[in-house]
Every structure is written in structure tokens, then in C-alpha cells.
Image (cartoon, rainbow, N blue to C red; front, side, top):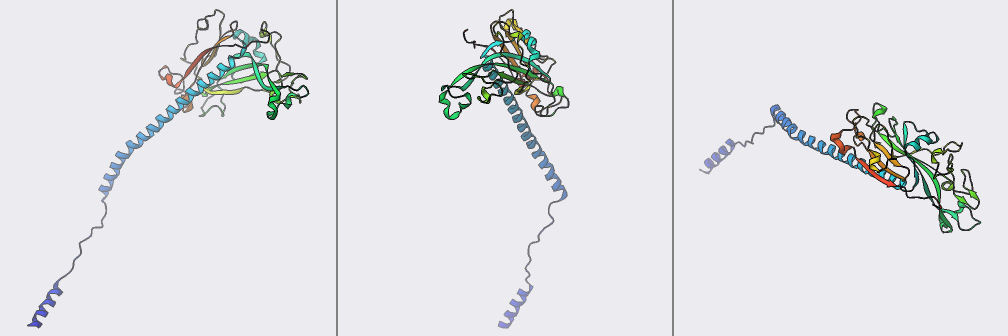
Length: 331
């Protein structure tokens, strides 16, 4: 009996088979992959477009802000400069002395004036010392002084210069304009004489600039001023770039006589009216205006960078009226 039961158990176990679940390793079908790719494209593309749009908008806003700040800073600098003027030239005066000023390629002198220039720590207190001895470690032994200085602001237009025409345009007319400043000064007068261009007794900042000649009578006949026979060694330095180069459909030039309440006020400008000055020489008064062009910082197409009355936010404009308050000694 036991043998029979053992036989049946063994027989039963031998008939049992273990079967594992069947695995399907076929992967995604082509249709599934295609549907996934389409869904990914439909989701990612709008998101990427949105990100790119945000980045572009941010860039444009930064460009507008930068241009606006530069125009304001430039005008503040010019205003401070002109406030020290003794004599501001009107259009008649600038024309009279134009051939005595430096020739600047594509440049037009807009604002020209005489001023008192402060020279710090230039006159030795000790009579045996020289101006060159007025260095940082003994500045307390030197006094400040003033010298006469001639300043000219130029508007430089249509100059295809790789340094200032960025991004590079296809024609010079598409390059932004810029304002450049030129200044020459007289030498410091001290007990040993005047600091001339090559005076070894003086520091560079104390010397007369080559070409400088003091006017015979700044109060009566500044329009007859002539430089010395020396060639200028100073050159105009750029104050601000990206001044609007547009000449068509630009804001009209102001009525200077109304702005300054003067029948003798004259305007100095170009076809762009992007940097101009109304000057009343008799009152030593000037109205100054400048207009930037933010579009030119990231566009070069001729149709995209010109002045547009519907896009004034891209053309920040600042203006001010300033009176020269300096006086000659004895006035």
C-alpha cells in the first residue's frame, strides 16, 4: 500500500510543470514614437518661443534703458561744463572762428565756449619751489588756480568707423552719430613765468596746450580769436555714442528766440536736429537738446533704425537751459 502511494505521488509530481510569464520585449511601435515626437514638438516649441520672446524683450528693455541713461548723463555733463562758461558762441561766432578750430571728419561744431578751468594744487606756496613739485605727497604746499580754456562740442555724423559703428551697417549713413568734446587750455602762471608746452618746471596738466592763444579781449571781440601757429596736439574725445542719425521726418528744430525769450538767440544744429544748441551770447545763455537712438544698438536695416514718431521710447530726448556764470578777474 505504501509503495502504491509513493508511486502515485512521484507520478503526480513528474507531471507538474513550472511555467514563467511570457515577456514582451518588442518596445514602442513606430506609431507610438511618432505620436510622442509630435506631442513633444507641440509642447516644447511654444515654450521655447515664449522663452526666446522673454529674452528678446528683456534685451530690448535693457538697450532702451542704457541709451536713456547715457543721454541723460551726457547732457548733465555738458550742462555742468557750460555753467562754467565765460563766453558762449552763437552761430555767428562759431562761423567766424570755425577755421581756427580742429577739422573733424564729418563733424560739426555745435557748442563752443570759453571757460575758467580749475587746476588743483598747481601754485607752490614756497617761492623756491616749482609747479612740478606739486605732487601728491606735498599737495598742502600748493594752491589751486584757474586758467582760461576753450571747449568745443562736435556732432560727428555718417562716419563708418568700426569702433563706433556697432553693429556694423552697410553704409556710413546708417552709422550712429556721436558727440565729441575738444578742449585746450592756457598754462599756469607762476613766479617763474607761464607753463609752456615743453616746460620742464611744470606737470602736463599745468602746461599750455599747443595751439592755445588767449583772446585779446574776451568781452568785446571773441569772434576775432585765432590760434597760434602750432599744430594742435589735442584731439576731440567722444563723450557719447548712439546719437540719432536720422534726417527725415525728425522733430523740427525749436524756435530759439521763443525758448530763450531773446530776439538775438541763434541756433546751431544739423539736418538731424539730434544735437543742437540755442545760444544768446549777450546773456551767456544756452538751450541744449540731444536725442539718442536705441534701435541702432541692435538693428542695422536702414528702414528699422530711422526716427519714428510712433516709437519715441527708442529715441530718448533730453534738453535743458543753462547760463554760464563764470566771470573774468575784475568783472
